[in-house]
Length: 208
Image (cartoon, rainbow, N blue to C red; front, side, top):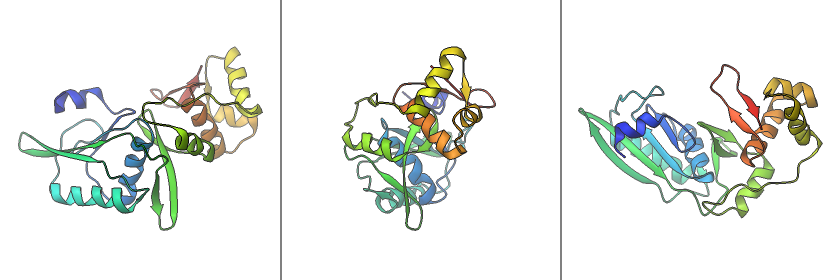
């Protein structure tokens, strides 16, 4: 698949566009989420709309990426692959992130603050402790397993049996959860195959 075909696919679970790598803290989340899920690629020099803008200094981008992989991710990512491509005089860097055999990885988002991430659609989503335990047991190409659900999680499925969809705000009211706890609960249900996440409308929603 050539560069144009790759871009035409659009961002998703295994593909991320980056205009540039601004700081190891930021790119480490993307790299971690891909390694913790099913792997993927990052196109550096492509903006969010899929427009090829190129990078000014490939070596500088490589330095930031390697710094992030080695010092801002724990355990470090040692299997990244880098490929430079020229398109009409502009340099694009393709970073391939294999799915890891050493999950879970955590990204340093601030000094002393390490957090796990997985890939959900085209987002890097922070993991819960339970999801990290699943990652520890998971080998590449394995699916997230179905897990027993608690009362609040079951209430989502019960709600969706009589309603076509549920939003984050609706779920927060349903179980009286704060936004962060409610979001992590829904993401857990997505990762384990209980519900589907939809983000093509203004407000994301979830269905069976």
